[in-house]
View 1 (cartoon, one colour):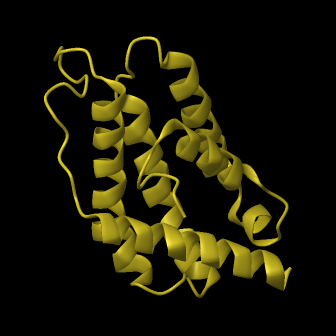
View 2 (view 1 turned 90 degrees about the vertical axis):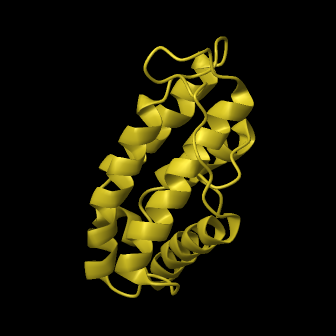
View 3 (view 1 turned 120 degrees about the vertical axis):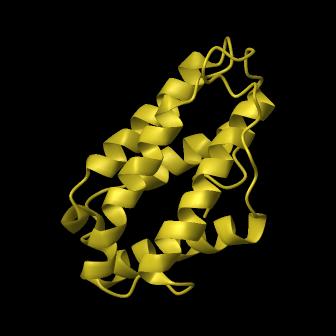
Length: 146
């Protein structure tokens, strides 16, 4: 059980630190919102990574600072923030032809975000790691990168 908590703390801490190191991007007009031009894979990744960077920098850092989450209370406070991040990524329009890959990592991340924190702490869930692997494979530089 202690190993699982340490692993979660390492993943969460690395996630926060990696997002802070990248800096905040801005979504381009071709990110697929409001009838804008069709997003490319690169602009989709840039828009999603900007969401993760902003949320990690502004909100996750406020909960856990630059250190690893050190308590169950901190981890519980992170869950609504993570769920909002998932919703914002899911709201982006995927590039044409990329829908199956995008749907796969969005669905995996949504399922992970529904996981009870006790399961994550007890090492009974590998859902975040699976979602993050799909996101990394797709090409994210911030989202899902630990």
